[in-house]
Each structure stands twice: as structure tokens, then as C-alpha cells.
Image (cartoon, rainbow, N blue to C red; front, side):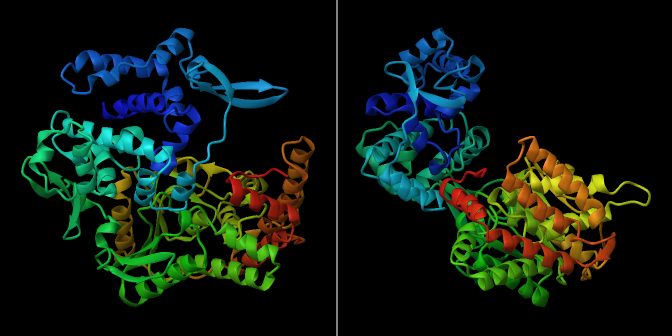
Length: 587
């Protein structure tokens, strides 16, 4: 009910403020903690006819709703329904995909003229400023206080939504936190209504609602000195119960580890890129807080420091965080800068340090468990490959995507795939198909779209890695996994020297397959060049016959190939494209 109200509120504000479909979706997407589909793309996916049916039902069945008139959809929506413009299933809605001269283009609807036209790029200084922050609450504050029409829209939207939500307590939920959890689970919001209220300043917003004469529920006025809807006391997150006027622990929260509630008392070490937090029972958590949790020098330092501290005084280490992503991989900006300036010694040192850190995670004297969720790409995936165990959220998107940046996995990922292929060989069975499967996973930058699919791709391993269905339990489950490994008598493993590589006997087959793909125009000539480098490493080099090699041997080959590709202009073009646009370049 609140989620649909928020969509209909957007329709109303769009007309009042003279905003376009593209402008609204720019404001109500990830920058404000909503899905990429924002408002109108979401409507197209769900079905505009479905939205109208829900709105009509709410208008009919909620006669006492103080904002009932909002459920009367605008006339242009009725016209769209009559035209059959009901979204994706109807072929067009607020957006329409057309093909002209062999090129596809997505047009946007002008709701005033009901005509489609090419999308206008929307740029607002306030949104640009907000995007510079990884802190969602800070971004919302920037948007809310902006002096342009983004600020005008954001203030009108949140103030009306806040007022509406107060009336739904206790009508549809006895506790405020249940509304927030429902919106996050059902609509994909990163932050709930009352959480957003707190982020903007509870007392200030409440005063603003009173000033604007928005109708709020009596319980809010009765608690006029309310300073926040949520608080942290005794390392427990609590919500304000309007029935008792007291803060109470959120039921079940004692089973969760919320890193925010442990700070600052439990931080044992930190730098600008990460913090090491004591999460109890002699377990440390290494938390990243770099941009998109990318792994640069400070994060590498933090991982090593966490393992060092744990080896002295703790049972083990969890690597995880409460951010938006586990890790988007290595810091491409740093790598690009070094490569452009041809600082090869610096690059060699950085890649070597990354490899050594991955091996430290694998071969420390204490268990290291990676708690992956959302994006775990590139270096984030390599860290998972080297952890003693992975506790993966069911919604984990994990894979080695370096090929799209014009390089091969250089932090031990290629080595690890060669090792796992070796472990899957059985006497008498053909070996090339198994190696080719690993090769193709890297060469096509294949990403598992769930933790279950990651098992199919060989990124997660049965018997070692596990899945957590409830994202809020992820760190708790990872901690329990550390303790399980420690209590089972964890011993420091030895580096492998028995990895079977196939040399020329497989190299020719892999290269022939890659060449055939290039001739069929499935890949570019430069893709073929990268594939040749990858094949060389995963086969153990140009060896005359299959033989056993060490992990360090493969790491050296991997690093050499990685550095050589960074010397190529087309690789730098690919990296530059990813940094500037976030999209891979096929050159």
C-alpha cells in the first residue's frame, strides 16, 4: 500500500513540477537507494495495467484513507491502458524500444503529448554531488537539501510519504520497523521510510511537516520530543514503539551482526579503506569501506593486518561488510594510472602484493571466511576463491570479469582455476574438456547470478562453501563457520606443488577454439589476443608435455601475462571505458 502510494505520488509530483519520465527515473534510482529500474521502468516491467488494478482496488477498499484521492490514477495513465501501452508485455509503456537502420534505441514517453522521442540526458549538479558519496544516508541528505528541482521534488516526495506512513501505524503494522522491512523486501528499497526520516533528522523533518500542515497520526504529536525512530543501545538496534513510548529491541536482531552497532568500541584497527572489528567469540571482521568496496592498497593492508592480529590473539577472520556490495574488484583507477605513466615496477609490486595477500588468506594459521553478497567481481571473486570457506548470500553475483577490462585475472584467479581443473582430473578421463570449461568461464567473463549458480561454475565448492538465505544473517553465519573450522582443529595448510598442467597438449586445442570464435565474429581480434595469454597461463606455459608445477609457478606466469596486457593500448582503452562509463568496450 505504501509502495504503490509512493509511485502514484511520483505521478502527481511529475505533473505539478513539470518533470519528465527520464528526470524522475534519474532521481528515483540508485542515487536515492532504489533499484536501477527506478519508477517508470519498474512500472513497465510489472505492468501498468497491474498497477492501475491495484490502485483502483485500494481506492475502493480503503474509504477511510486520509489520502484516498492519490489512488485515482492520472488521465494519461488511463489513455495508455486504452492504447494497450501497458509496459513490456504490451511492447511499450513509459519506454519503447525501436530498431532503425539496424540499431536499437529506447524512446521515452512525453506524458503531456503521449508521443515517444529519444531520451534526453538528464544532468543535475545535486545528483552529481550526491553520487560522489557511497553513504546512502548522506546522498539522501544532499538531494533533500538541494536548491534545484531535484531538491524541490525530493522534499515534496519524502514529506508527503513520511506523513502518509505515520497513518499506516498501527493500521497496517503495529511497529514502524515492519513497514521499513516490508518496503526493503518487497520494493527493493535500500532504506525504509522511517530510516530515511532518521537520516534527514527526525526532529527537523517533524517540524517541517507541522509547518507545511501535513496530516500526521496522533501518536507522532504525542511523542513530540522523539529524536529518532531507531537507536543503538548495548550494541543492539532498537526501534521506537509508539504504543509504549519506549525503545525496544527489534525481534530476532540478537541473531544478526550489524557492524554499525559495534562501532566505535569494537574497532581494533582501521585505515581509510577498511576497519577491523571484534565481532565477539574471538572472531575479527575485516570490513571494506572504499568506493564500491574496491580493493586497493589500503584494503590489501587491512586484510593482511586482520589475519596478522587473528593469528596472534583470535580464532579466525570473517571478511565481509554491511555495504551495498562485497567488492567490485581491484581499484581500476590506480591500475590505469600506473599503466599510463608506465610505472612498471610499481605495478609489479602492486600485483605481487595482491597475489601474496590472496595466498595469505589461503595459507594462514587461522580460518578465513569470506561473506559474499551482491557484487563479488574480479578481485572480490579471487578473494573468495582463496578463502578457507565462503558463506555466500543467495543473491551473490560472483565471477572473474577481468577479460572485459582487457586483462586476465591477476590476483590468483587464473592459477586457482588451473588448480581446480587439476583436482578434477581422473585417470583415464579426457582432461582437455574440463580445462576448456574453466578457460571459457574466464574468457567469456561469465558471472554467476546466484550463489547456487556459482557452484555450477566451479567458483563455489560443495562441502566447503555454504549459502545464507537471509542476508541479515550473513555475517552471523560466517562467524559461526569460522568457529566451526577453528573448533574442528584447523591447521595451517601447505602450498601446493602438485598442480597438473597440460602444456602444449591442451594449449593448441584452446587456441584453436578461440581462433574459430574470432573467425565467426563472436569475439574481436583483441579478445583473441587476451585469450592467447589466458591459455598460456592456464596450460602452465609452453611445456612440451603435462607435468606437475607449484602455485607460485602459475602465479608468476599469471602476473607476467597481466602486466604485459597492461602495456597494450587497447587494454587501457577498455579500462578507461569502464572507469568513465561503467560499460565494457569491445575493441
